[in-house]
Amino acid sequence: MPQTFLELSEKLEQLRALEQGVRIRVVETNYESLGVDTPEDLAKARERMLKQG
Image (cartoon, rainbow, N blue to C red; front, side, top):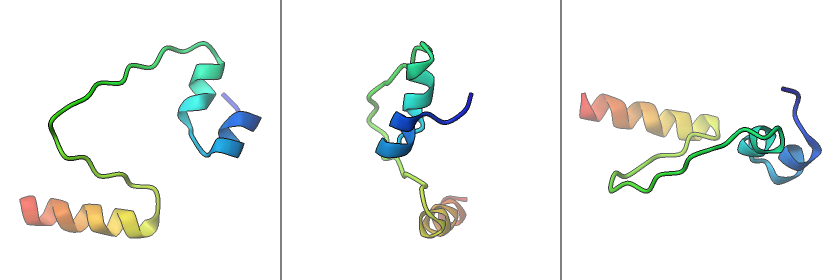
């Protein structure tokens, strides 16, 4: 699916699917998550994975 104006303006890739009628499920968990949106985030995620084994 091509990117949509809304996705590009809001910077949320989930909007592309939603605008096409795709259902998205969101589930709350007790786990700590880590967003990876930048090269710096990726470096932090890799470091965290190495520490956890």
